[in-house]
Structures are given as C-alpha cells and as structure tokens.
Length: 237
Image 1 (cartoon, helix red, strand yellow):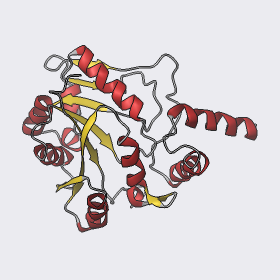
Image 2 (cartoon, rainbow, N blue to C red; image 1 turned 90 degrees about the horizontal axis):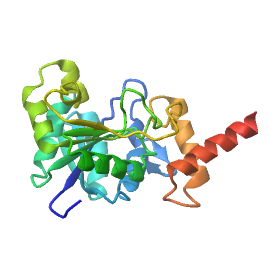
Image 3 (cartoon, rainbow, N blue to C red; image 1 turned 180 degrees about the vertical axis):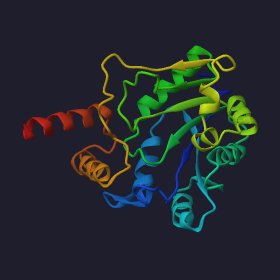
C-alpha cells in the first residue's frame, strides 16, 4: 500500500439497539464497550482515520460525547438511513480513497483481520471486499467490509431499497456486474463462534474474555480468544 492511499474506518454505532439497548456504552473492564473496540482498531496498521457514525437522536448524546473525548471524529445523522450517515462521515475525510465499514457491537474486532481484508481488496483491485463471503470462515464479530470511495458514493446516491439504506453495502455486493468483488477466507472455519454483542449473554462472554486476557496482554489476539473458548469448553466437558 503506497502512501497515497488513506483508509478511513467508519464505525456505525447507536444506543437504541432493539435487543440490548445502550450496549455500545456498556462497561467492559471499566470502559464503555465502544472504547474497547476503538482501542483495538487503533492497532490496525492499515486504518488511517476513524469516524464514528451515529445519529442525531438525543439517546446518542452520551455516545457522541464519549467518542469525542477520546479524540475521534463523530458524524451524527439519520437514525434509520445508515447509508446517509456513512455519506456524512465520509465527507469529514475528503482525502480518503477507501472506506472500511465496521459496527460497534464487535469489541473483539481483530486489527490483523481488518488489515488482511484491506490487503485482499488492494491486491484484487476490487471495488468491494469483505471477510464474509457466502460461506463464512471467520467468527461472527470480526466482520470487515472495504470499498472504494466511489462505490460507496454510488450507493449513497442511488440506493432506494430501504434494506440497502439500512445495511449500507448491499447496493454494492448485489451488483457484481457493476462492481468488482473480492472475498477473504481462512483455511479452517471458525464460523460457529459468536463474538458479536446482541444479547446479554454475548456481553457477559465479552466481559469474561477481557477479564481473563486483557490484563495480561491488552493486545490479545483472536487466537487467544479461540484458545480461551477451547479451554473453557474442555473444563466444562
């Protein structure tokens, strides 16, 4: 990757999650969950800037204030039209030629996986790349999508389907005749593992991981989490 490229990570976040409201600000080892995720994203060698895209809804005031206090950019836009939020977030960093889409319910995000997905995108000369092909091999919670600024701008301007407005990228990956797509997989599938936070038990799992791994090594890896799960399963068996 040459110095002329700037990869902008846009982290979408909101407090009004239907299944676990306020989860992004739920404490994980004494810090809001989104802060733990931003800390992990900061270890990426490929991400140049991060913007958190949240809404103008008053419920997101504490979230926005916290992220700003960490020194990150925040864009606040439509609660329902997430694609429009991405357009606003992207406009804050006009020099970025690539956008990395991430969601704020993934506090075990792996900077190495993010970087590998960005490398896959660059090497393929793709308009869009992700590590979630039709047959997933990465744990749920490590999802990474990478796209050209132009592809995202086209989606922002042209997408009319409400599903495409809410989920940001379907306008791109549903059109392989228009956009060049690339996908990253790993040899051994870990698709059965669930590391994303949607439910109270997911949050309990993440808190346990941090309690058992973070104090020993704040930069703990996915392999460390896998080993922890295997050891716990073995102990429970």
